[in-house]
Length: 279
Image (cartoon, rainbow, N blue to C red; front, side, top):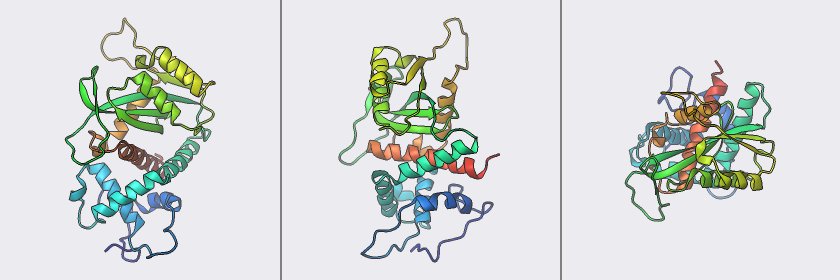
């Protein structure tokens, strides 16, 4: 059994698994994890080991039952992932690290501009009950889920949702903005591609955030071959960063909120490495 007394000590150049947190990275996250509830049995398992186990699944994309024996049991990892997603712990960690990353590059903690885009991912075969249904993206010919991302101009994730792939970008974009709940009140500008063109997204954004200006970035009709589009490349790069985590290669999750949790964890991993390795 892993306990706080017998947990291993990690150095930057000597990790058990590449996905493990270094001491420096753990020092950023540890104060943000809530303590065990009072009453009942004391916590006997290392929270750091729990986070290392979840990061292992995120990085390798392995099934829960294939978690190595030197990490906490799969049931413990899954229970803590669900708990941290529902009680707002992951959101708190993400937001705190995000503000630190903004300060590191000498920007205001709250952004004023953002970029929106979506990614359709193929769903795998799943079992179990209460599965959030997939959809069919006719444009990309993918049956699965669609991840909607909002990033700032540096490429850091602001917010994400997951929904069936048959929901159009313009409708999913409105849904994404409606779930911000005033988290970034100083947003004034948003860049989007042609999928968000039209009154649905424009009017929806105006109703939710009246001061938000929408700019559609289109590919030139005369362009030939690959063309880097202003601002849109930022969110595409963020998607590429997140896809380095093999758990995000496809839609493996039964529940959308679990998929969002892994997206947020991938962003957390990215930010702690930026903070601990600024070069």
